[in-house]
Length: 212
Image 1 (spheres, rainbow, N blue to C red):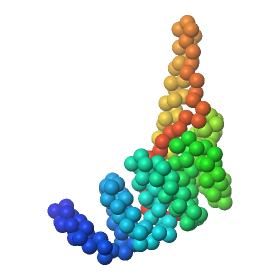
Image 2 (image 1 turned 45 degrees about the vertical axis):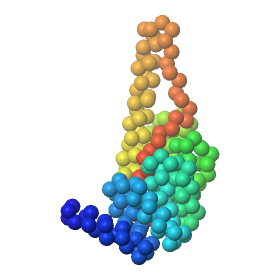
Image 3 (image 1 turned 60 degrees about the vertical axis):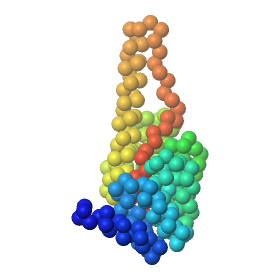
Image 4 (image 1 turned 30 degrees about the horizontal axis):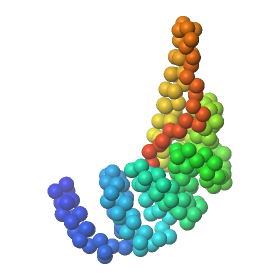
């Protein structure tokens, strides 16, 4: 199959103008899963040319832009996806996450209000509550919320990986502070480093194959 794939790609490239939006989206998903961001973005832009109101394509394009560091475009297309389909809850969470990682806490909070109808025990609500607690330096609450969210999230393993990374970084940060605090008594003039309020953890854009 590996020998045939370049040949298949050549056929697809020659016939792109004959593909419909759904076919282009499927090709984009395959490229996303292969970390071929440039090709995925090309397919998604072509799909949106054919169907500008496709919330799923907007969402995935926004996630791909965020993945390659083009945050403004990531925010633009993620916001468009949520506007087209407010029930795209994964998109609502991801948009708030992009705002948060860009230092735009107020916009993140407003965006995440779109998750309130899911109930306080929904994993996405627990995750956003944990990240909001992190912004307030309420580290114990952050840890509790994220751990509950991970335990309850059975549909998006990639998101659990990202939230686990947040917990690991939080543990490392608090451990470093404890070491500094212990050393203060033995080193004259030593002071513990102050926790940075609202320290942001950029979380890689996850790719949820489910629509919601």
